[in-house]
Image 1 (cartoon, helix red, strand yellow):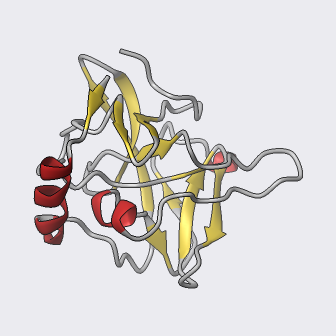
Image 2: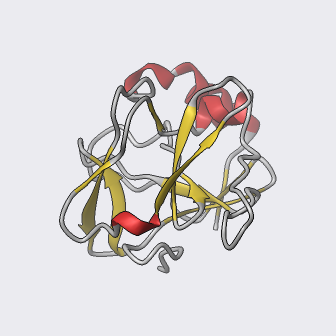
Length: 150
């Protein structure tokens, strides 16, 4: 497990202008890495992560994001203003949304709110996997909606 130091976090937040966080319509795709296998990403092949401090929506319960303020600066949520599109291999029935405190709609997968990691500078980067930050760990999600393993 990797841990973010305060200095690393500050540099991460300052570099936050590289990620698409104001998407009109979200698209989920599958990507593959040798290290983690298949994982959920956006249309630009940028990895998406789940946060263990969040409440997974399942059954009759709704997903709840625990990532706000500085956390959302380092881990910007995947938001949408319309229906989420899917590519081959992504299970459409696992897609949902939750309303964030600011009124934006965050995309969920298998009940987990989805986030980018600000240190992922290029499509295919997965530097946020198995990172501890903001009180819990962050993981890539498999096509089945489970956390990816090393």
